[in-house]
Length: 204
Image 1 (tube, rainbow, N blue to C red):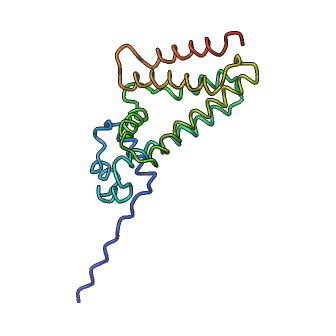
Image 2 (cartoon, rainbow, N blue to C red):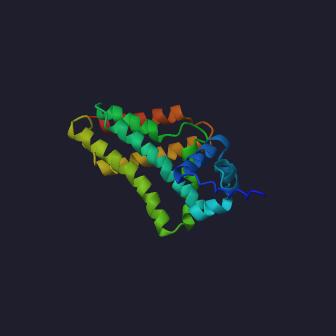
Image 3 (cartoon, rainbow, N blue to C red):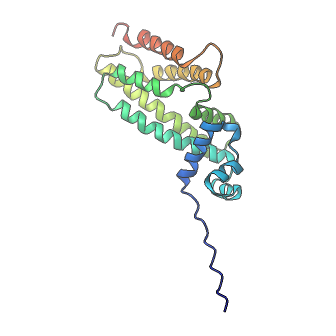
């Protein structure tokens, strides 16, 4: 008497965070151009169709991966900014966290790609991108305001100064991330620290 065939067990899909972590690891190891739905599916044991079912599109996958990466950076930023340390020391830590590690920094590579695709994005995606930028801006404004109130920084408009500082950081960071010749992380940090000394510490 033959035994009945054992029922096939469906392999459960990995948690969504595991998929996002795998996507980020692939960008770091192989570059963004190698991150296809099929390649990511092979990495996490899912079909590209299942990935599309979960995320809807590659644009959504990239944005969610960026949000996941930003969440980790946000936790590290909060840790650095809430330390018992002078405001300038914490501001330097903010800048250090902001600037890419070097050419093809995975977070910045992803950030650039998401913003490049945002021209055709819907309002929801644009709002989520604005939320990412807003978190960095609010933390910086709060830190500047604290430094001013304690007399560590001279009296500037924290919101206006934060907007200018982030514009400087973004421009120089893009140069580092794309590997523009003549610009490296050390040079960028030096430029920014000089800008901060001139703008915040003069006549403090």
